[in-house]
Image (cartoon, rainbow, N blue to C red; front, top):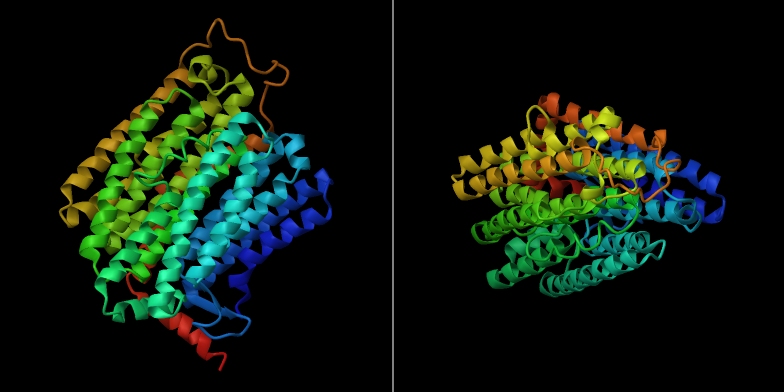
Length: 504
């Protein structure tokens, strides 16, 4: 059994359990919080290194061979996602030390956070479609409590919308699993890849593909089932909003990429064209919704929808370059988008509000914060040489190669509107003068310089965004290798079969 495949799930699980055993000890919770996140990142890096050197890794839990036992599988794509989960976990663990209020810390914020990380890593590493459903439910339960923790009215309203649509998604997902099992008699994804290709019922396979698209599309917040996201992500404390923006929708995107590169490749002309069209519509509706908002977090929340469209564009094009671009774009977006949320929290600490009309003067009073904002905002808008520019360039080039000119034009237009929405935040929150009639929502003593715990992760994420863009070549090569593995399911299948044969 490869311990590296188990550690990304085991570490946050143990961290959460240890916190529950010392319930009420806020100081120990804070220490375990950072230590657990750091260990998760270290485990992710070790797993990625192993996959880079030795190829796709697989193991069978309980020594039951596939397709009967539970498989854990790590290819480059899943290993990259585990690493970026570790990066964001460590950043939010540190940020929370300065941003999270004591009441929520006392009522289980930190153990819930790590149990959510366990669910996310489990979803990235599972090789079984039913266990993917289980891990989705684990992260859904913990994220629902995190969103509602505190019991404020806006939180509860957002939580109801969030959980309702996600439960619909889970019902669709479970229905699709049941029909799939009834049709082919297996739930192991490597085995499913082979059995579905042999199934002499193309209509049934296409129907299953659409069911999975709907289920994962809700979780990814794609058009037209994204309304739960802008209605909920701005309601919890900023640390929760930041980690949700970074990871939760990306688990849905990951699941879409996994099933539509491994399981449903029998009718690419139909299924992936539908994904491409939905991706374009997701880009447009998301960015138009963001432009219409006038609250810092709401703009960022709606913008998540728009960025999901770029990732779907890469999957819909379904070429090596396009898939590499989609993976690169996921990593870039996690770093840039999460940092914008972290920065909005610092601005709120300084000014006591998220409403743009109440903000202003941040550039003059805190120029370093304005620079941090510009780095992430420019990256999100696609300014060179930052990571967002390369992500969009790769996707545009992939679209031009297969002559998908309409989608390329949409992606470029959405990029311009993204820049417009970022300029809107800049001009209102940073550039204009502080409103003369401003009545801070918090007292000046509480709204002074933000905690160093909040500043350090924002600086680190901004540096990561710069590095990802400036040192593009090694990252691009890794993404191309990951795309090659996705387009060659035989390697994934062989890794699972080899792990099973080793048990006999």
